[in-house]
Image (cartoon, rainbow, N blue to C red):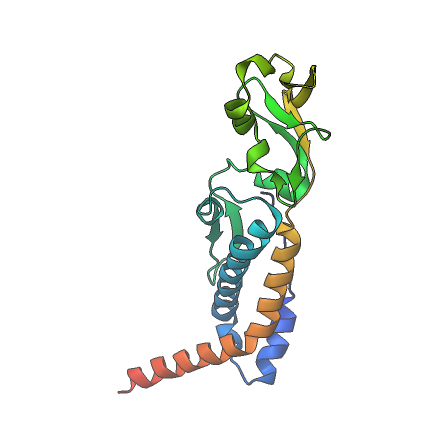
Length: 208
C-alpha cells in the first residue's frame, strides 16, 4: 500500500519536553519509541478491528501475516505499516481499483439471482456451492457465465469477466491516521518520563 503520513513538528515535542523538564538530547530516542509504539498499536487495530469489520474473513490469519511494521530509530524518525505479502488486494480495498486475476476470468454474481449479506455472497450462493448442488441437466457453464435452469428457463447466476472494479471498502488510511495521531499526542509525556528514568539509571550505574 502507498504511504499515508502523519506529520508532527519537532518544535511541538521540544515545547512539551520543556514543560515536563525533559532533556532535549533525549528527544530522538523518545520520538522513535513513541512512533514504534504507535505503529504497533495501529497495526493491532487494523488487524483486529478495521479488516474484519469491513470484509468477509475467510482466512483469519491472513491479515495478521500480511501487515508488518517498519520501525523507527533515533537516526530515522519514520515508521511504516506495509503489506508484506501483496496477494490480498489491500491497496484496492483501501482506495478502490481494478481487480484482475492470472486466470481467464472472474465470476461476478448476478444481482437478481444471487443473495448477498452484509459481508458478501452467502456461502450457499458461491459458484462452487451452486455447481455442487445443481443437477447437471439444469446447469450450464459457458464462456460468459454460470446459468441455472429454473421454470423452463436459464437464469444467470454469475457472469465471467477478465476484471472487476472494486470500491474502496476498508478504511485503512483513515484508521491509521486516527490511531497514530492519538497514540503520539497522548503518549509523549509517559515516553519522555520513561526515557529520563532510563537516563538517570545509566548515570547512577556509572558512579556505582
